[in-house]
Each structure stands twice: as structure tokens, then as C-alpha cells.
Image (tube, rainbow, N blue to C red; front, side, top):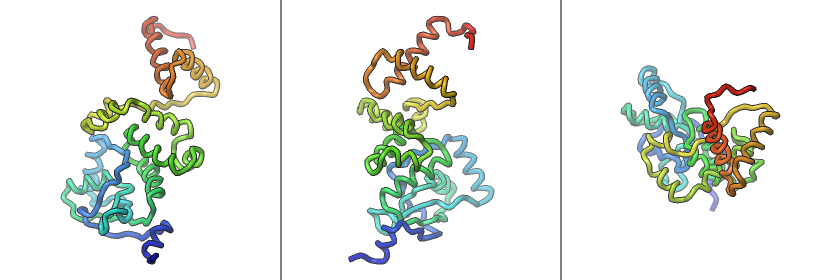
Length: 230
């Protein structure tokens, strides 16, 4: 039987603000956002001084009645717990699993930064539910950036497992990185051609990384300290 409550959940309704016990909040397993310690300290200092913080966005937990799953505000909840808060101001949204993953992939980009592997896992789940083009229309990444992030999952499984098992404080040092920079159309064509040739036809979607690494090694070995003409 369909109840008004389940109808709300399927409709993606906003249930509104609510004060929730901190013990009733659970993190989303696909949360990919991490926050450097210096930013976390600043967040804690701000909350401690002002007592104010943006409401944490949650949904009724899909598997644990009476509890809530965090969609945005994982770091706020951790800081508030450290500061001794027992209740948190939340904005409750009734969304399904697909909508929750989309919110997780968008809202959490506003603070902190992503762990690339965890971001790739989240994108993998979303790509199983919608096309690359549709997903790129919803997220900050372009379709090309989504493909490159998703390619991180092609690293050997045992290496990924080892990286994810490492201490969170060390992840920024050892996890694969995503490098982004702005170039002109002419520069992009030149760079893409050079990287493709430098990859030596290496198979796999990480061939660009290997090609760029080969270029960097060859440049340094040939005396990279020399001033190059533009």
C-alpha cells in the first residue's frame, strides 16, 4: 500500500528544517569530499565563535528508520560533534537513491575537495543510471573530465584497495591526482598530439597520463633548466 509518506519520498519533496539529534545522522557511503585540516580548523573556529552554520542537508535514511543520511555537510557534522553539540539544524529532503547521488555530486563541491578515487566511484554509480551527456549537464565536470575521472577505476584493484585503506590524512599524498589547466584551442591541439605520440601507443585509458609523464621525463633529461622559446 502506498502511504502519503512514501509518495513524498518518490516525489522528491522538501520536508523542511528540523533539529536532529547528532546520533541520528549517518554519512552517505559515496561521499567523496575531504577537507584539509587548516580549513577544518577555520570551520571549527567560525562555528565556535558565532554559533552559526549552514543547515546540513539530509534525507530520511533509506535503510534505518528514524535516522537520516547526510547529503551535504559531512564536515560540519564532524566539527559540531567535536565541539560537543548534540543536536544539529538540518534541512530534510525526501529524495530517492538516484537523486541523492546527484545531490552528493553537486552540493559537496562547494566546500572541501574531492578524493579522486571516491569521486570516480560516485560517477560510476551515476553513469549506470544516466548517459554521459546527461550527467555532464548536471555536474561541474565536462563529459571529457567525467571520462578521465572514471578511468581512475581502471587502476589495478589491489592498488585501489590499498589506497582507500590508507589513513585519510595521507590520501592527498598518494592517491592519483586530477590535473586541470586552461589552454587555448591551438595549445590544446598541440598538447594532445604530443601526449598521444609520447604515449608510444600504450593501451588503456591512462595512456594520456603515461604520455605526459614521458614528455616530462624526456624534457628534464634533455636539460629542462634551459630557457625555451615560446
